[in-house]
Every structure is written in structure tokens, then in C-alpha cells.
Length: 332
Image 1 (cartoon, rainbow, N blue to C red):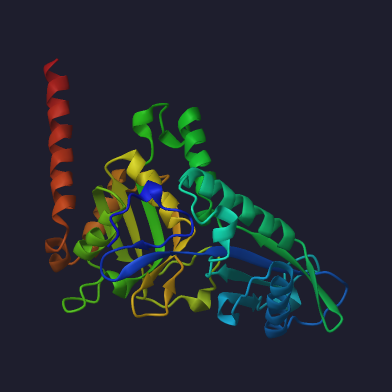
Image 2 (cartoon, one colour):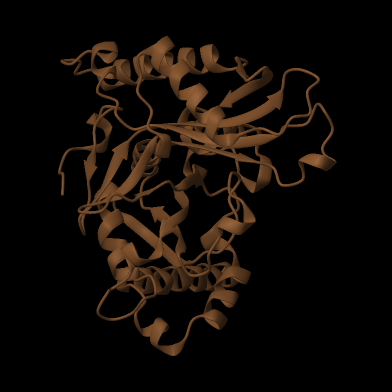
């Protein structure tokens, strides 16, 4: 595991975690395909992929493998209007070695390196967005967007505005700054104790995410919900988990969220990369009493015993502090 401080990690660097896991940098873009002419010919996903890969190669000198480009046409094309999209997909750029020249191989100023990286990505998106590809006489238009979960700057602006204007229950106080990260789409088996259970383990998860900062509270459970860019048929029950991590300090939360944005989780010895979604907690997950009740109902007796000691200790301290506060108010 790497002991390098998170705030010194450049956007092209990999972060080593426990259990043979690592956070690998990559660029991810969301694609939406529209018709660019009056043709009603169906889109050929394979031909579209080849055309786009060739275009990126010739225009940007970037090589994209077929497995790093996903194009899926909508199943109800015969019911869609002409102006509606016919397909969507995802584009990944995993080999970021070429960006060393853009950022500077000896650039030690992380803030400056981040700025150069974001400027390059913005220009890449702007040049790709709106291009037209012709497939045997049929034209298609491509819209490109950066996923919300890869936009750390956008998320930071969001919570700063919420705090500033006191929306959604947040007060105008630095003490009310967010401290909790929500991750979805993580491979469940990577967070399980293999010889003990196939369920995600609090202990394993705590050990892995401790590399990102000191944890105050933690939740991990199976997750079969559908993401923003997933198809219902792709979701297989019991394969993914949802992880909620609350850090003790806001700065640790910021550094962890920034590192998780723009990276995939990879396990040593495996070609599989976990393309998770990450965001910040806007609803007060650990303050929601209903969540605590529902969690107890779902959790078997054995699962209760396996809860992380840090989590239990925090709950006891929070309850004690709350009761003390009430007693003092009554005495006054």
C-alpha cells in the first residue's frame, strides 16, 4: 500500500490500496448518438465503434481498444421520434502515458498538474462533441459528456452553494461541511472475507478505505440498483455493493473524493476494472434514523456481530453525548 499523501497524487498516478487493490487513473466519457439525416436505417454498433476508434486515432493519436468503447442501441428504436437518441455508450482512455508531456513529467505542483489535466480533457471533449460519423451513407451525430461522478470541481461547487445558502438542511457553518462519500458499483467479492462469507465485510472494507483517511463511520451492503448509464438487463443480483464512508475530517473527505473521481478500482492479477460511481452524501445517510432501523431488520444476527468495532464505538459515543445534552438542558 502507498503511504503517499493523497493531496500530492498527480491525476495520472495510481494509488495502491490494501488487499491487492489499486485506484487506476483513466478518462471516462458518456456518449449519446443521434441521427444526423433523415435516414431510418438502424445503427450498426460494431461499425460505429470502428469508425469512432479510427477517428480518435487519426485526430488525437490516441489508441482505443474495442473493449474500452461501449455502444448500445436502444431497444425501442421503432417507437422513438427522429430527434431522440438511437444509442448510448461509454468511452474509456486507460493509457494516460501521453499526458505526461501535457502535464509535465517533472511537474511537482499538484494543483497546476490538475489544472493542465482538466484543460486537456475539456478540449478533448469539446473537439469530440457534436462530430458526425458516416456509416455507409447514413450519418450519426455524437454528443459527449463527462460523468457527474468524475467532476470533482462540480461536486465541490454544489456543496459550497448548499452550505452558503442553507439549503437541504445544511446551515451556514464550516462545521456543517460534508464528510461522507457514497460509492456504487463496487464488486462485492473484492470486499468479502473469502473464507468466511460471500457477503461484503465491514472489516475488509474498513481496512481498504482507511488508506484514504481516518474513518468515523462505515456502511457496506449488497446493491442491485441501476446506475445512470446502466441497462436493466445488465444488473445481476448479488454482484455489486454500495459503500458509504464517513471521514472524521472534511479535508480527508475532500482528498478521498478527489482521488476517487477519474479512477477505476483494479485488483492485482485481474483484468477486471470496477467502474464505480462516486458522489458525496447529500441526505445525511448516517443521521437518518429510518436507515438505521431498516439496516437492523435486514442484517442477520451473525452480521450484527461482524460489525466494525469503530462503527459500534461511534454509535455508543453519539448516543451518550446526545443523552448528556438532554439532561443538561432539563437541569437548566
